Length: 468
Image (cartoon, rainbow, N blue to C red; front, side, top):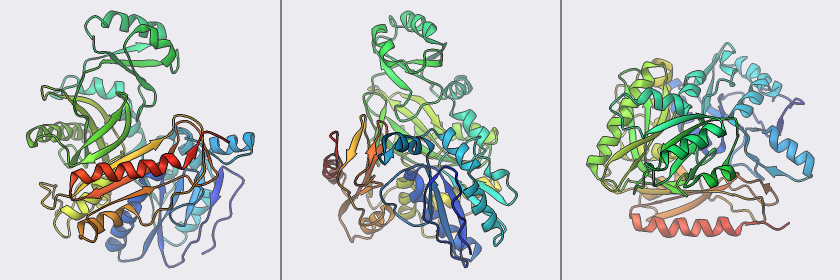
């Protein structure tokens, strides 16, 4: 098969090498969920009894990539590199990324070429967006929730309004239009919300577009967009930040994957997660019940696919709902690996569950939820996102992938292990807010996770410098 030529669009890296005897699906999204694609590839190959592989369309600018068949589209990195003369890594909004992917002649030429030899081109996504219009092409099928439904549910005001009159324990909140109303509202609430006020925009994630304020004096320094809409909620001191991953297949058909504990810095910045959760089985069941209720509401609205619910648990063991993430989230790959090793032989994988949820509105008959962890398998992750511009001076090679790490520990080839993944690579400049790398540690003893994560952090921190 002829490889599509790169057009004069926003593709800044391409290494397509198409095998004429292989069917392909596309992945559109951030590199941090690209690791799920081998699981989906294996399932599709089994289901259709033919060889499948994937082509990844990413916004991530790296010195080297973990596999072949990658297109990189990042208009912001391209502009910054043109301005500075340096190879620049920077985050681009999901809206801008999906818009450029949908407009790319290189991507359209690739899809046309694939459709000449296969009836369907599946598009696997990290997050569904209305701007991703590729599924409108005849023969292209989205393996994820509808973009409009996902975007609607990712609006924090929408989700909190929808859930506030249910049995889900939503944190008390208010909405404000613009800076003046924000100041007035927080002034009136400080007397009763004495532990602080959490401020965010309707669309925010992993600490972006959100902050905790203890006084009106610090509002101005944290303002994101003065004329924007804001949500304010009571900050509740708490001990745990659990997250639950689920999959919605319909109004009554919801699959709960597992519970993990998030590691949050500064009250709102997600840095990683740990499994199994340290919470009691009773509290975990409460969390799963609320997540299932959210999933049913998603299913009733037409949403089909993976989602996650974040909670906090205070010192009195009271559960409070924080937010819904209508997309894959930071624990998805690790949860998929846990299912692969802890569920009965032949049980469907996480990508298989989502495939049937999206394409048929149901789960396979042999679907079974995780009930225990007899092997004591543990994992922990850490995301290194720089808060200043840095230069990557050394490269941290990845000896094997995360799925292999789980296999080796689960199969007793290793007692424990750690890998650094998705490292940017030597010679690149990373702007504030960019992920420099990600760490995954797996073991059979929870206490080993701390030392493995610490070793990974040392490697990551030593790899960068603020000096030219």
